[in-house]
Structures are given as structure tokens and as C-alpha cells.
Image (tube, rainbow over all chains, first blue to last red; front, side):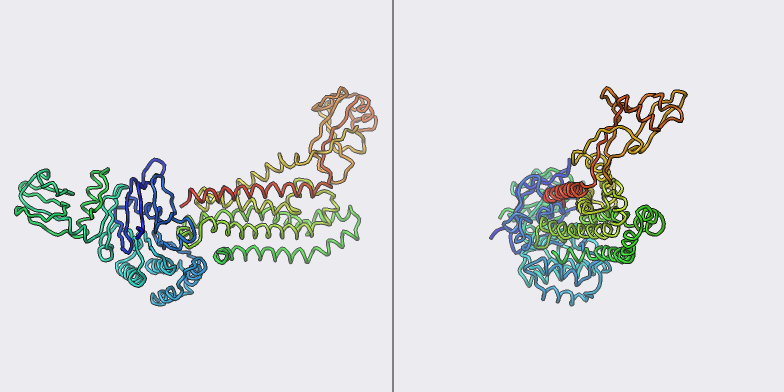
Length: 296
Length: 328
């Protein structure tokens, strides 16, 4: 099957500054992919390239096998919820549904209406009067009711309170479960993604630091704690992502596909948050480290 | 997309329709009486009546409305069209529906552009109809003061102002600065065309005539000493309602002079008398007048409308080119 998002050497420059550089990435279909990184890491740039709001300065990107926003057909296949979930303040909720129905040939009005009803939104209410959570839900409704094969969301929950955040992610997952769509979702908070993602991309300093299936990534990364030791003396198969030392003790996060037998180490599982933080820190210090891909 | 365009535009459309209706009622109520007055009064009396009082005020209001409408369209319909959506981020919503941004822009520009032209055309039609008695009495429609407020040329202005506003919004990306730029650029374009383009659209008619009491418009004698001083004169042409584009004094040697040097026959209180004019004719002084006859009004209207429509199309083409590359 074609990758939902396939980027090769992708880069975007704004005047002098590269917002995204040398991005090579292939997200398999059927995943909920989380795109994490600090603010300004290039997440929005990557997603805007994917929906065709930006054109690349370097490299290529294809989404569901097609050039982003090249045709109405391509636009119909991708749903997008932009950052801060913009809606037309002067238009009512019903107007927004009307807009979706008229501009999307594949519009699922049953889905849209039932979502609005379920959310308890008043169709006559102007979007400008909705709360942040309600507005995000309205934007999500517009994006899902066009029945896209791929749904792209740019920090959809960033401005929401914890409850609205949970509800939003819940309704996102309901849609994914019911309609077998792929999702790419960005956030600067790992906690948002931990519950929903099965694929992870870490973006820092305009580069992809890590990309792969969450299960694989968690299975191949370990935290080792033991007597102080130089990271260079580790076996060849163990790649050090992060190391910290006290006088007597070393703590390292390593990546290896082989089991760790050295009895001197206490081996711990990493959480997704630990993993992301390790790569974000590595990206911030090394800056220009090459992108890593999971070997499968 | 047509629906969305109308849904977003309808408030502005209602304002325009209300203004059209208000002006239509005012002019429809007063227009027939003005026409009757024109038929039943002597020309001089009619002009006196319409150069003061309520008809004068109404004619000024009408002229002002037709003058202002294209600018207001650029300001309130053109400039915010893209910039407001850029500011609110709603373009990211609109451009991710199953419709390409080129089509989005084409429909927006098409519908609102046509509405702009229709509105300006209707305003101008009403004012042109209402003022026709006054315009007939004045015989002059080509003068810069009325030309732009009559006929079809406001349609061209409106199309241009709208396209200019959209372009400014697209480039500047902020509504208020885009509005300011639109107004400034529109006024500049109107003034430039009026001063430097319109007089040359058609080759003016040139006549060389001696100065007589009959054709004299102005006569100025500078530094009136015992022998008189330099004289400047301006004459009219035998063509009612003509728009005089330029006028020069030619001396006996066939050269253009800025003024006529002192002539004894015109010195003191003998200035601007038949003997003075006879002497000037003997010395060979002639006035070279270049003018546009009033009959060319519609030719000028079509030409200038075409110019502004062409500029509007150029700007629209630029918007399409820009939107594919530079906007997000």
C-alpha cells in the first residue's frame, strides 16, 4: 500500500531560515501518527506542506500518492484541522455544515449532523460565540464529515482545557475506529499523543530526529543504570541516545534491537515521554544530527 | 462556493442595495420636476436655479456618490476579501475543502467583481439620468469635474478598485494597511489618468484663431505702466461644451510665447478693446487652442472604461499567479 505521507529530502526555507530541512519520512497507512517536537521545530511547516498550503523549497512530498492540493480529488482525500482551529466567526454552526456540504462531494451529512447533536452544539449559534473546545470540535466535524482517507491535525488541542482535550481526542478516536482513516496529529505535549498514537515522529531543530512504530520504538530503547562507564565502551549494537553520569553511576538511554545481557546494568522500559524527551534533547544539542529511521 | 461567497458577502451586498434604493428614491422623486423645469425655463434661468438651492445640493450629492462608490468598493469589498481570511486563519479552512484555491479565487473575484461593476453602473446610471437636464444646459460633460461621475466609466473604476483592493490584501496580508493602500493607490491612479492619460486618448482638435472681443475668455495685463505690460489671454473655441486641453499664444514669427510683450494700443485702459485686438492681429498674434469636442464624450467613456477594466484584469491575473505560489 502507498504511504499516507512520503517525504524525501523535503525542506522549506523562509528567507534565510530553514523551518524544515532534509526531511525523509514515510508514514504507513492505517496509523495514528503523532508528530511531536518543541515549539518552532517545524511541525506546522511539515503539515502545511502535506496539505499544500506551502510548497517545498527542496525535495518532494506526496500524500496518499498524490501531490498535495493539486486537484479537488486530492483535496477531498485529505481532511485538515489547522492550528487554533479557525472557523468563520460570523457564520453559524449550521452555516459551517452547509459550507462543508457544498464544497465537498463526499460530504457525510448524517455523520456531521449526528456529531453536532452529540456535542450538544446549537446549529444557530455563531461560531465566534463558541468556546475553544466547541470550536475545535466544529473544525474536526468539518474535517471528518468530508470522509477523508487521511486526517491531518495541527496542534488541535493546544489551546483546550484538559477536559475539552480529552473529549476532542475521544471523538477523534471514535472517527478513526469507525472509518479506518489514517491520522497525522501534531502536538508539543507527549501526554496528548501517548493515549492515541501508534506511530511516532520526533521533530526538533527543523529535522526529523526519530520516526517509527511506537511499539517498535519502545521495544528497542532502554534505560540502563549501572556503575560509571564510558559510553564508548558499549557493544557495537547499542547506540547511545543520551547519557548522564554521576561520580559513581551512569544512566544511558540506548537503542538496540538485541537483548541486553550485561548483568552490571539495571534495564528499564522507557515511556513514550522519556523517549521523546531523549530525542528532543539530542536534537537540541547536536542540532545537525542525521535523521534516524527504525530498521525493520 | 457560490453559496459561501454569497453567505460571506451578503451583509455588504445589503448595505449597497440599501444605498442604491435610498438614492433611487431621492432622485426619482426630484428628477421629473427637474426635467420639467428644464423644458419650461430659459437656459439662463434654469442654470441659475440649479447652481444654488436644493437642486445644487442634490447634484453635488449625486456626483459625490458616483465619485466615492468605486473607492468604497475597493476599501470594503476588495481589501478585506483575502486579508481578513489570512488574519483570521480561515483560509486554511477554506482551502482544505474539496475545491482548489484557484477556483476559490475565481468565484470570489467573479461574483463580487460583477456585483461591484453592477453597483457602480447603477449608481452612475441613476445620476446620469437625473443630471441630464443640468448637463444639457451646461453643454459640458468632458470636463474633469463631471466626466468621471457620468456614463459607464464608473464601472471601470469599480472593477479596478476592487481588483486593487484584493491585490493589496493579498500582498500586505493585513486588512487595515491594505485598505489604506487601496485608497491611496486608487486615488493616485484616477488622478494620473485624468491629468496625463485622458487628454491624449484621442488627438485633440487644434485651431489657430485671432483674438477678438467675441472669443475672449480671459485677458490679463501685467505691470500696467504708461506703455502697458505683458499680456496673457485665453480664448474660447466655437464648439459648445468643448474641453480645452491646452492653449498657447503664437507670435508673428510663428513661435510660442509665454505672454504678449507690451503693446501701446493695449496700454492703460485701452486693454481688451477692439483697437487693441486689431493691433494684436496686425502684429500676427494668434491663439493655438487644442480641444476635445463635446461629441467625443462617449468615445472617451469607452476608452477610459476599457483602460480601467484592462488594469483590473491584469491585477486579477497577478492575484491568481501569486495565490498559487506565495500564500499560505
